[in-house]
Length: 499
Image (cartoon, rainbow, N blue to C red; front, side, top):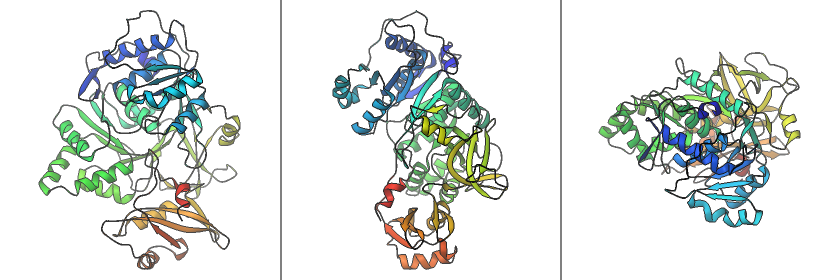
């Protein structure tokens, strides 16, 4: 993206960002980014990879702040706007950030901490403008560090993932080719902007193609449906990317509507070019229900903070339910055993990835970096899959989704998919609990479909008609909702403590 944002915009008058009822052109984005780069530089010639942590409301300000950091030669460190102070401090301390940028809404959260640490603190003043600067900005090599994103931390302490400008360019280029982004696209950003899904797939991909990104302040099923209708009535091409949890909530909303409104919304959604699901496994039931309600067969894909997107169902071709698809152009993928030897087709193995889209290193964690790469340079994802007739099918994450019980290796995702098909169950998650007898005991946390009360004895008998007895959960708990992180992934280690 660095080479792209350095150049004058190809579409200066075209809307780049829509947020809070305002439209901002590519020229406005270009100018704001450059002016902020000069503010950051403060008469220096290059930030020289200084880490700049920023906690900015998603929208126009967010994008020009991030682009300004890159133009000034800094390393962008996005902070989650919903995280508690302790988590924000962890990221700022870990990256050794020297500059902190915040929207006015977040000034009070970080001001005392920043003052105590003696860091430079920039609060974005609404409506303010800086004097126009014309001095040249630094010219950066592609291998310069550009961004540090933190892993979800669902299985260990979050690690900072370093992406270079070359890595980001490669990740964006792969998606432009695979998903056919166009300058007519308009994409809605509902996703947190401290994760690769929101930053790369939605914002960078859309803007690199010359499209428009629209932001909504928070998720509302009704507002999203209004947006579907508005896009359908415009000359723009709709693109919608979300996590399974959002599709689940949209389905729940759509099913409350009268038939005529439901039909009108489906007609609006069928005008869209593409709808994508990612960041967590897409239940087959959600995929099938969404297709009935929207006319769209969701494109499921697979990626990680460390690798961007690596595997995807095809843009044109069969989108197979329960499968993440095939390697994206230029991305090498293999399945291996515990000795890093490639397994035969049809055999279960760990997904390993190689290519220009793969991150450089973890921030200041050489041992973790070494442990996650094979001797010949493949990244170990920790996710277990099988190649099923040309399409990869995720079986789970080796540390939390593969349950070793009674000598069997069981896929928690497979068991969850069967549970979700029961009419009394709205959602579920399966984990392995330590057991002297079994090694691990299969346990399921259930969310009841209102107003159902789940009869676990009946459920157990029902499960045994659909899968071998050794796969059927031996313990159940019912919860009002499952613990999830910002991207909608169930935090399984937290879930285990609830049993």
